Length: 302
Image 1 (tube, rainbow, N blue to C red):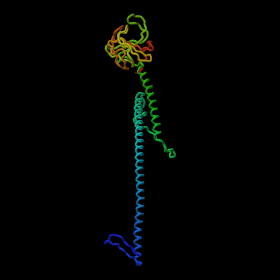
Image 2 (cartoon, rainbow, N blue to C red):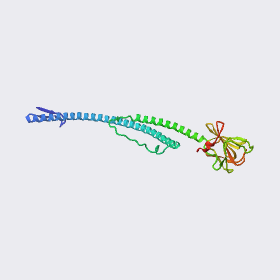
Image 3 (cartoon, rainbow, N blue to C red):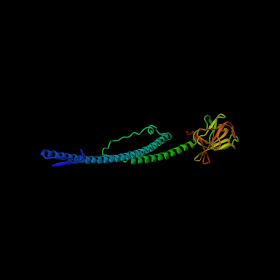
């Protein structure tokens, strides 16, 4: 076997003669080695290319998972923000209910230990292992919020009722119109000090020191402040629900028509103006424009 190498080696072709068996084996081995090298290189490249493709696909999947995780995190954060806002609203409602409850305890004069709105309520009960544990948190919070709003409306209505009741109590005449002094004449028939005849006395007289305080026996609005025949300097107060009180013979008047006055407020100074024999206050109670005996109001506690 002759092998000729063509090249520029010294300008002549190179011939290689393979005649012996070992030379043939060596040549065959050389060819097989070259072929194996080429095949191995091709196999390695193909395997490496496959791994590269797999790595690329894996990277793309990882990027997609990252995007999904980020979206999930954002959704979770949004849900947490919504939940926090919902809880904040519930806390505000609870705060309002506690404040309203505390006001009602004071206004209604309830036992503050029994109706305690400053501490968490005590509760408990046995554990039920078979009870349903799967709950919808949003549904529970929504139901709780509706219940709180309903309770707040009910308590507000109750507060209005109690306040109206308290206002009615404040507007009902009770107590004496003076701080110091004595009763000098009662309601009913008596001998008139000026004529000597038996006449109807439609009020009660409270005598005392000139210039002493005259107080309103109930809350209301001043409907008369000034001189009136027979009464001298008169203060008249309308308390609503048909009740009116009058305070006559004042030396000085401290309120004006249209003023709102509270129970116990000083409205005038005791005097002897008008048809009077000495310092006192002529006190009348009217119900539906008719004078009635003030004694039960004077004797009742404010």
